[in-house]
Each structure stands twice: as structure tokens, then as C-alpha cells.
Image 1 (cartoon, rainbow, N blue to C red):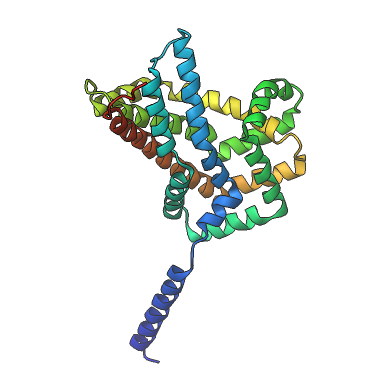
Image 2 (cartoon, rainbow, N blue to C red; image 1 turned 180 degrees about the vertical axis):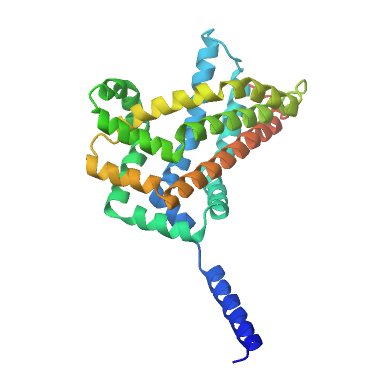
Length: 284
């Protein structure tokens, strides 16, 4: 075969291979189910709403913050319900993950998540987000940590470093708070949304380093409690997966995707609230 003919044949083969790879269906929704992201996103609406209700109660008790009248607070909750609707968040997350995570890494992660250990860990993580278990962790995790061996704590620290949990959480908090501030300013004719968002970011950014340290410490305490029934050998396997190239890329992609989804939801909440505030007040 002549060199030119060989190159043409090779080029044709490469094009065919690329086309076959592009035609391979992605399995993002399956990954979201098996990783627990599907459940986690389903819990977001209740968590956001619960945070707002707690803030309203504290404000009414004179502990700081804005007190909404009942009608306006009902509109705020309705805006949250719309912006953080589980199906909406899940669809947005699927699109983000598909863009952030390669098909090759997706296959590696699904293999891990489909293993007996991967499935068991996901179940533990999903259950830890349930209100009753989350409340129990809040009460008991500090005491539990005092009895955890240093070697096991060091294993959790490795995992936190691998997935850059503190850094990711700090960024998510700053971005989400800024986005919500931007959105809420839309409902206030006296506020400039972009200016308020920048003010919020300027206040939070200097606290980033302290946030990272705080979130890492809380994560050690949380991991020690949540995974308390997982053996050292199984926990080591989990850490090794998290430290692997595919594991690191998966966690980084998940964090970026979640950050983008929640930030956009915060802005959308403001738009929904602004639209509801333009409606006439309900008559009693």
C-alpha cells in the first residue's frame, strides 16, 4: 500500500472510531443514582427551606437577620420550592456532569460504584442525609471523634485532601451565598443586584482560608461518625479510589457541577421571588 493510501485509510479508521465513541451513550443518570447524587439533590430543597425557616425564627426572636411578614415569607418559600425542585436540579446536574466528566472516567467510577463496597458506602452516605440521622450526627459526632484512633483519623484526612473537600466547600458556600444575594436583590427596587453580589463576595473572600480549615475539621468529625461501621480495610479501599486519578477527577467534576447548579438555583430563586413579590398581597 502506498504511503498516501495508508494515511488515508488510517484517517478513515480514526474517524470511524471517533464516531463510534461519540455514539456510545453516556450513563450519567445511572452514575448519579449509584453515587448518591440523585438522593442528595432530592434533599436540597428541604434543606434550603429548613434553613430559611430557621433564619426566620431566629430573626423573629431578635437574634439578627431580616424578618419577613407571613405573606412575603410564604412567597420566599414558594420561590425556593420552584428554584430547588428536585427534578430541576437533577436535570441541571446531569448536563453539568456530562460536560465536566469524561466518558472514560465515567466508566471507571461506575465500576467502583457498582461494586459491593461502593453500593454499601453510597447507602450509608444517602442515609446520613436523612433529617433524623443528620440530627443524631450533630449531637453525637463530637463525642464519637474522641474515641477514634489516630490512624483512622489520618485515613480520613487523606481522603479530604484527595477530594479537596475544604476548598470545594468554601467555594460552594461563597458562590451560592453570592448568587442568592444577587437573586434576592432583584426583588428589592433599592438594591443593585450586581453591586450587592460583589459586596457579599468581598466580605466572604477574606474568610476563605478560615472556611477551608473549619470545613476540613468538620469533615473529619463527620466522616468518623458517618463511616463508623465501615472497617479499616474497606475505608482504605475508599480512600485509595478517591486518591486515584479517575477518583480525583470525578470528585472535582462533581464539585464543579454541584457548585454551578446550586449557584444558578440561587439566582433563579431570586427571580421567582421577585415575580411573586410583584403580585398583590393576599387578602385575609
